[in-house]
Image (cartoon, rainbow, N blue to C red; front, side, top):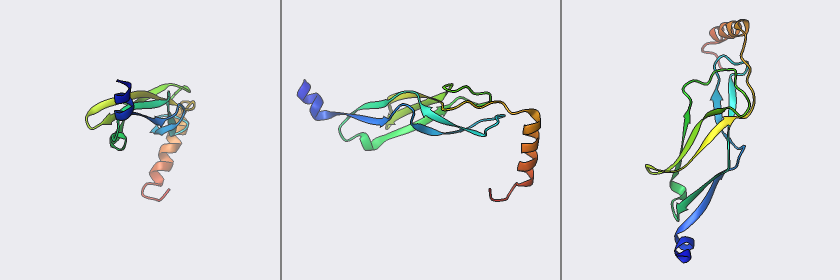
Length: 120
């Protein structure tokens, strides 16, 4: 039984706790984006030869809106081989994002409007 396991199965370390999963847009925040990081180490138990077939699907909560606390859950990451789910973990906010005031949001809207079509 052990020989079969060692011959046909491998552990693949995808990411470590705290690694960046992606940047997430924040609505009505002082900052426009927040880094989404993995909540835990991600290790997958796969059949040999499947490690190149692993895909990642990020599922965020519908709307990420300020205020956001550090370590607040922003969504999930699902790892698949084909259509088969082989792992899942949460992504969390790496830092706090405070809610922007009405005045700040108003001026941001004006600046965005005037810079529409320009390279940023």
